[in-house]
Image (cartoon, rainbow, N blue to C red):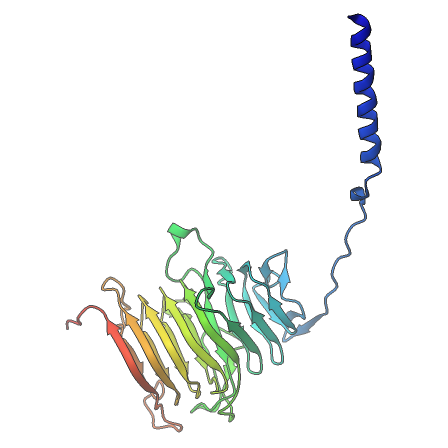
Length: 312
């Protein structure tokens, strides 16, 4: 019995040594660190700028309160965290693949801003929409958790040039009615409208002087803390828009917007309303009610409004 025990122990020891030898020879133990990517950094208007948009694996922006993207990049389908105010600069282009989810960071009032000359190509599909939403946990999301989506173009505006509230790089306006700022198709924007100052919030989607070369269709804004959609000037034509349970107005047109919206749905919540009164439609030529040209002349057709009856 003792002799057999020694043989078994010896055999086990040899097997262990053999296994150890093979492990030591494995090619998987290469400890050479992967090369770090190199980006082209610069400064633009006092802000850090880069030809790369993604940092720390899945973070959009470098973490600064304001960051300028100056390259051309595609966001592969996945989930990303948007931090700070990220500007898509003149000449830059961001493409987002269908099925992508972008979560806005609350602490940094995360917002995505397309500057004049920049492009956002967000082309989702019916089965894989592109979603901009809150970073908060599912049961803790609220109106105004993050900033919103702002697109600035070069189409006509009745003040020639203007700046959208809240952004230092949100100037818009020009003389190119056919300007192209990209594509928004099968896109959902949720829980936007962070208040950057007292009684001042960012809309779910703000369109400043966006031209009719831009494609906008099948877009839903839900639970916005200000207007769901607002147009300041511009000529862009939109189809299949949904404004769902926003705080303020659903469709707001100003400053000479002359585009059209066909096929729209408005769903109001009787518990949500701004102190200035919330309406399905609000339209002004400008803040002072002047007759400046071009005159606000938007066309809405095939619109359904569902909500509580107004009581004076």
